[in-house]
Image (cartoon, rainbow, N blue to C red; front, side, top):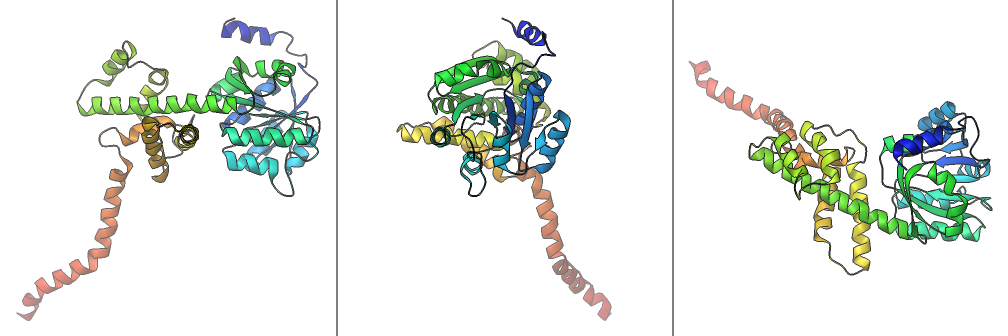
Length: 346
């Protein structure tokens, strides 16, 4: 079935609610926000949202007729299925195991679907915690962008119990055009780490190739055409080359997140006693972007480190020189005064 056909299929009976299950979202940044909007468009009952960014949560709640909850326990109480889309393991641990208020309060019978790119360890910890409270958990790792989330065209990698997956397959299908059951909890996180590791390496390689082409005064449009027809072709060439050339790094997948995900892959490799030198140097580049204040750029922004004349440190140099000049100004005045002194004596 084509994407077009599937979208058409979703449009049938659009006034009929697809499920009586109530939905909530914890983490309504760009991806979570778009997913909630899409399910609301499909007439799912999205009852509650939560985010540390209270303004974002309030805005989404007002838009879709949900409640912007102040407490995580209230989110769990308000829905049958709770999607989580948070930034990292630390945030995930906090929302599920934080003292005084967390999602596992009153969680019996609930389902948690965790969509962020996190370590296998935190996914397993959450699933174990949910099971102890007679709740269930699935991984639904996403390999797609914000636009795909908004239109229900995500690529989802599922980890967890197969029966739980089957019972909620319709909901997951309504968020995606590609749905793959990977295996037990933690396995989807492993596969997602591999996906992003390879993507990040490809992105860094493309940035270096285009940067060198620029330094050699080659036509970048021609280079991209040659790349696309040879072994240099990649999905990243299609999605990021134009942005690298035009310096259009509006964030779809941030450099900071790229560094985090390459780090997850590095930890997996360490445990497997495997060396991944390309992943290590790629992570180092994205870490460098974060240190230099470029972590909020899209991953394509790695080209700012490789294209000639673009490096952020070089751009900041003039400002530093000006600051240094100001500090040295009194000395210059003194020197000038000394030179003029003989004239005054005359």
